[in-house]
Image 1 (cartoon, rainbow, N blue to C red):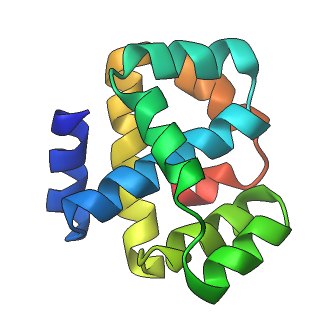
Image 2: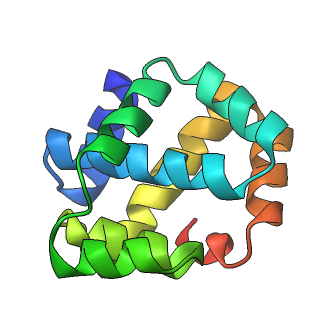
Amino acid sequence: MDELIERITQKTGLDQATTRKAIGLILGYLQKEGPQNEVNQLIAALPGAQDAIDEANSGGGGGMMGMIGSLGGGVMALGGQLMGIGVSMGQMQPLGKELFAYGREKAGEDTMGTIMGSIPGLSQFV
């Protein structure tokens, strides 16, 4: 997880705590919305991923945008949650690209392709 956090902080300029929470929110979203087998493979391939998900879910949303994000569903709700913890619109795409590139390295192209193909709107972030 540390390697992934480092890569994302370099690409986005986010601090490590925000990056870890953002990773947890995204993976938690995938866990809820994505194909279970592939998402479980991804989480298993990323040591510390489940801990990050649990921490992100227990920490609350973060301000009004987090609250709005928790009300609805889909990728837009995830975007609201990310904004609620301090991730700007301009940081979301590099964050998603780096997370999914790392996922491809660790869990494989087939796993990530299935996850991306199964969630409407996700491709705009990666």
